[in-house]
Image 1 (spheres, rainbow over the protein chains, first blue to last red):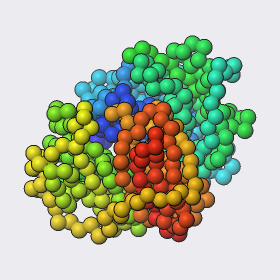
Image 2 (tube, chains in turn brown, green):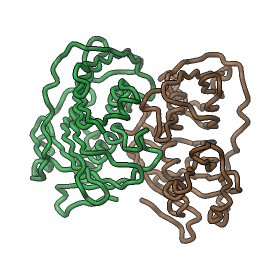
Image 3 (cartoon, rainbow over the protein chains, first blue to last red):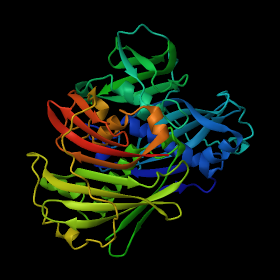
Image 4 (cartoon, chains in turn purple, orange):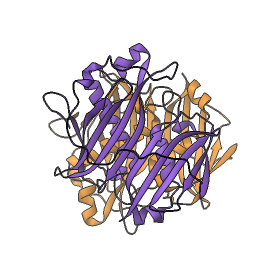
Length: 249
Length: 249
């Protein structure tokens, strides 16, 4: 179900959470939420004619650079939920796209902040997006009351894990899929921890692409178990930096 | 986009393949196809009032027992595709649900055969589903020209892999998610193999549930590299048996 306001500044899409999609807590997994965020952002850009199909003509593509999610609660099994998205800010370097997540009755249950850049798919360098001026004229004043992403500073890990990226981790650009980073991070916590706590706030910054068959190290600082820093390193270069803030269920 | 024929015997749903969903070959991954199969089957059962929400009232649930997929080709990036589903056969032990996959122009590009049973969620035993007589009266004569699943006999592995199931592998019943089995099987082949060949036909039978933190062995017989048998074993008990028939791209 897709709804657009007449001036296209906002874009809303509704989904049903089927049993087969749920995590062991009968809720929407963080990875599925990330997929929906990308899907809705993509659909909104496509509706403006500035999506993948348009940019690929110039050898360019949108790249997700940062995501911050803060949830009061996650959608539950057999619930409808919606994502409404709009642009909060826009300049020639990046586009700041926010989202509001609501339950089937329209109650807001979470917010999302995302930062997108456009890159040249050959050089992997970011390009000036001021030519996509259409977006700049469609900035919306919709409020987004969650804090922007914090600075994800270096840290001393309290524990580490190793993981070698495999076929299913790789996207169609030949890089590790952004959602897969998140999945590997979520997997570093045991089932019992997830059963007792949920991810109230999540911050992730994608620093550099990782590749097939490269060996990654996941560094974790859980000195404060409710506020955990995580980095994914491959060939000694950080690929993603993240923070998980947990809250007791 | 959802379409139903007036007598509800068939159910059709259309999807768009976004760039972010694609595999490195810019096609629909087998795992996404499996998710769509489950989604469309669930929606059709829900439309009949015999879905999850109804069955859970009796402490019962649908369980996917076998899947056979045969594809001429997979949907490509930025393509629309549809799944049309119907019941071919139905008795008190199982429901045989087939699907036809078409591209955006309506050309059929693949078929699916699935077998579903209903189980008592406490005892895990299969229950008589003849009370769901509504389904039996809605069997459709829609043809499904692919061969039923072959007998997946025991074999001598040529190679094996180990994998310990983690949090993201587990579904809301506390078992390893069926789609995750498939993902781990797909991952046993290197990127270059997938780049040169596609999975023309896939057979999988789910034998017994596997659990969080159990160590699985994946047994593989690739004596004929184009016709590979794979079993997933945990605690010496087979959990899933599969066959991948490849075809050169």
